[in-house]
Image (cartoon, rainbow, N blue to C red; front, side, top):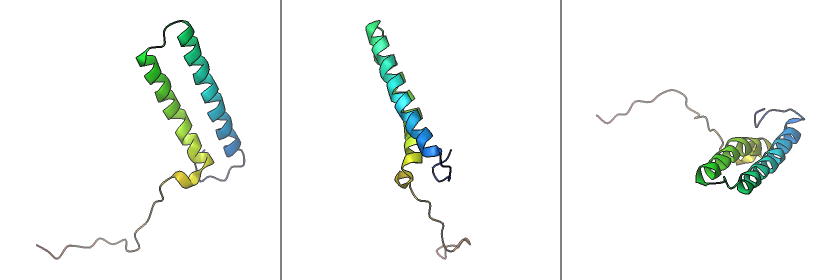
Length: 83
């Protein structure tokens, strides 16, 4: 599932993954907080899980947020005349 693929189910799956991830991370955070085990390392872990899962799926939903790749018109290498 890549941002510029033409798969009709990709956007629905990306939305579902984002929603399930957010709900799961909130539940995990609340569970750890209720057990008094939600410290800075766990907060960092939850944040890194969020960053691992959500941005690639946002790129599937909104492909215009990705930087565009420009190919040079002249593909041959040019040598510098300054020596």
